[in-house]
Image 1 (cartoon, rainbow, N blue to C red):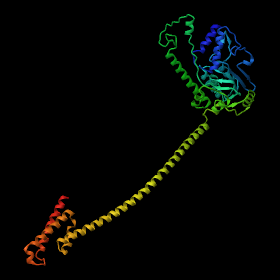
Image 2 (image 1 turned 120 degrees about the horizontal axis):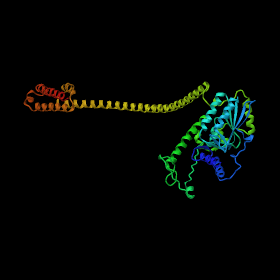
Image 3 (image 1 turned 180 degrees about the horizontal axis):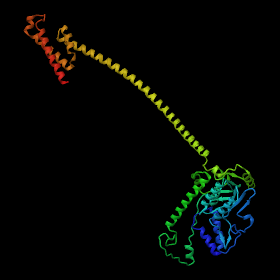
Image 4 (image 1 turned 30 degrees about the vertical axis):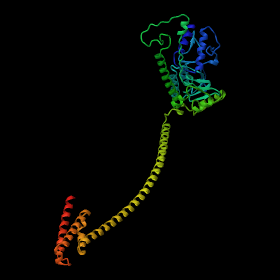
Length: 450
């Protein structure tokens, strides 16, 4: 018997479990006491009374109630051939299969367990859910105390999770308790030596502590199992993985559990049995495949419609934002156009003023040129010469005027002036010819420079 107790305890330690920490410590404490010879009146030391049978079944109405209570394990926990209580996944699958094959259409889980062994829990849940879907069986889970960790993992496959007042659900996490007896052995005078092949064969360093690589390996396995467990719960409860992870492995009372989507209803035990009878007699029993799984054409179309509506809402919001931005841009453009029109108007005024100033400058320039020519040429000659000299720049014009002035001065000083008399008929042609020659020369020079 002692050997079997140690074997059971070894299955608890250094192995990932889906169990509430309080329940786990209670089991370990019980096994420690039993190993030390203490006999306890514990939930693990059950008799085989009718009230603790695995299920109750009424074939006439096609209803069964299956008990999921105590510590959960893959295989039944036995001592000297006797069942220690709790619930095993193997037995749960066998019982459920038997009931379905016998025609049961409504099965209730009465759950009161803090969880247990991780191994084979999720495959067991998936197996039971598929068997129920294939045979049109409705599953209701009633939490009569606590449904934590692995127990909650079995509860989530139900069409509905119904909680008793003050009951708790959750603890969606993974637990490993590492037991290192190196110090205890050393205290008792034992020296432990391992002869191994393979670097990672033993988990201990030379000082007896756990190796870093061993702890990292355990953590990696815990993380992997946590990912699988949260995805499993999210799938069966139709929740996002983020919502499941946000529970941080806490347990919740009914009000918060319903808010998070971890449960569906709250009822007393009597209210639950009345509800169970109503569900069993209803011809329109709602299966989980209809509640959650998106398999029917109507649900697929509804999902597409919801996606399209969400996309349309997003596009509409973007369009409204774009309209607001466009209104701002148009207002800015209008403002800039008004400023541009004012600037163009101002430029037009400046150009008109500049043109007027240029015209006045040209007029003044012409008057000054005529005045200069009149000083060196007779009046009738000055006018015609002004037209001929209009193509010259100011420097060339002044040079011509200077030439005319010099020619005039030379004529005035010569004897011809006195001989011809005041009529001026003798000197004018010579003076004009000299001026025209100079003009022609300057015009040619100016063209060449251009």
